[in-house]
Length: 408
Image (tube, rainbow, N blue to C red):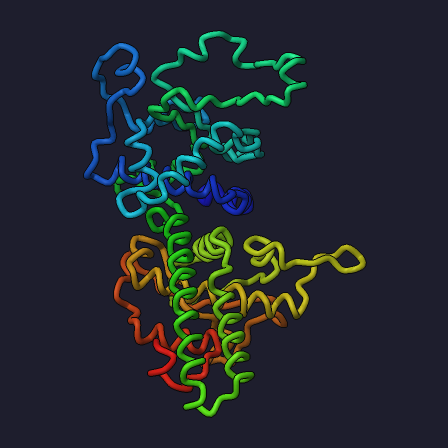
């Protein structure tokens, strides 16, 4: 869609995904890349034919590529393939969550959206559609099960119909996904290699964000308990009163709360917005329209004035910087250190509110922002735990009263 010049439509598609769809979207990007990275032949066993006839036949993993009348690609994946595609080896622990999301999307498909199909064409369609495949459909042979009704007696008894029987065994999924969102990964470029113009996210991006926040929450909870105990035991050595110790602990809790309350979906939108505005040059990405940025990534911070105009009030701008962007930048650094940003397009590092050379300012007054970014295919080891400690102390406003007492 960048090639077609449909940037606004691309933005709407990117920022309207919910958390469930984002996990599936990441897996489909991975699926398209794997099918054409030179290490995979791009074919697999026809699951439906194997189950029904016991015949081994190989078909394209990404079907409908050569049919221009089809608006969606299609992949039929076994349950084992589905787990590998959407979780990989590193995030197997999230398979129950991912599988639950897949089933919910199958039972309640996303609503149709007005999507770009070409230079002159638009279409109302769902970006993702999932059908579940059962090996034994013995309890669904009658058409009436598609629209079951409860008798008056059963309604009086308070019984409810369970529309999605769990007695059948799910053996795979058939998933359709909108071509213009994924074709840039598959299409041949000028060098006759797959990949034209697309935004690069790290593998399993949404799951890695969720995992980072969950682990941080666990570590923070345990760390606060240790610090609270140490402060109570050693407060007198610091000449702290009981009140001062209690106030400091509450300040510590409040500072950490900014980190563990970050929304994974907002964090994803922040990354996508930067990637969309990345010109692949220089160490900075300048956000020219602050209001557009906030409305796309953090719509909850936008208010309306008495005349109904959309406004970003000073208090909301402060919340954007201190409770959204700064904690997110720190989380991205944790992910970078652990290799979870490897393969991505960029890593946001820090806010740059003043250009040191020209003196140009960025912020609410100028309706823009500048983010310093690291742009590379591999970011591992660019940050150390020591640097984390210093930046975290600054971020959470922790005074280093006693490093030995408070820990790193």
